[in-house]
Image (cartoon, rainbow, N blue to C red; front, side):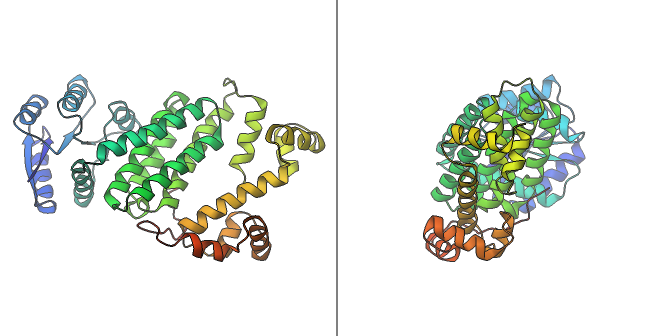
Length: 362
């Protein structure tokens, strides 16, 4: 039987939490502590699978008990419950590297669901391997972010999701992993200021509550795409960052491939004439602007055909093609297969669930 430890100084709330968890997780032994010191004593009495800490405010005592708990049991996940402003709570949660949190008041089933996912994850022997795997990708993303390369950040995220969904179809592992990766992206955005940090935290908080989306690779990717968009919006708005003119232009183009921007729009962004921009773009990429845009759209189409059940006509509209027939011809010319043929060949034997398209939290 696994042991869950609750820290809550309010006796009524403590007993209510114990009753909710006992009813929803009958396989667990629910322990309770009335204060930080007692919580650490309980951890010393035997292994604890999950630590749930109700934190009225993040003062020294509560920060110290969370830090001490992580030192006592590095593999033990921690769930924080708290009231107050989301931005204040999120900042402390990420700083203390807490795995999950719930804002009060919350529904009883949210507490049970969050605890259930976390205790299942902590029991999996592959958990440490996946953590190291995830951290390697986050480190790569951090390096690309420091070089201000949006496309490489996006591609690293795609590679991580591809590897995760390829290696497991365990929905609990996938949910925990994609949320942890999202938390890592939030931490990467910390130097960009409170406004960007709040936007990132809001995106991951909304995603956290969407259990239906976390098992679908494309839905997860769209959330991370929005998060990278927040980060690069902040970089683009602050001219204090030393981003080369070439990289700024590439970031703008890569972020707007789905929107189907034209040569004139890109040239206007770069403050160049269309003819000069065309030569400039080919010099820095090795291909002309139209080819670059087409390659980017085809790459996005492949992902949607493989990872979603979205109708081909919807995919065409998502990529700013006004005519499905034109999209189909362009795709076949580039890939050698029609979109439908490509989907039939590459969607066989996919992971746990396909996205129906759309439905990303806004």
